[in-house]
Image (cartoon, rainbow, N blue to C red; front, side, top):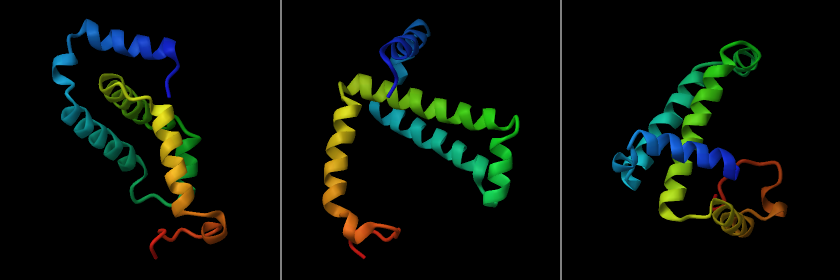
Length: 114
């Protein structure tokens, strides 16, 4: 997700503040959910047209900030768990390929068991 240089910078930021003590898996997972909710809040109740205008305005920075918060927290969690996020994504894609074959899934948003 983050390249090695940015990840090292994010980890150093946390280390300098001695925040590792607060960043247990449960707390990081909760914080990810909170930050994802803050991202959702930016879009809540807006039409597609309003969202398009928002993303072309200075308000786009809020979207970028919320995404960055989610990515940083997820990066801490993956680092602390020793989880290779690229390997996890590849594994999940294989599972999703089985659940959502192209011939059954193309062009529709139904869940695999519907």
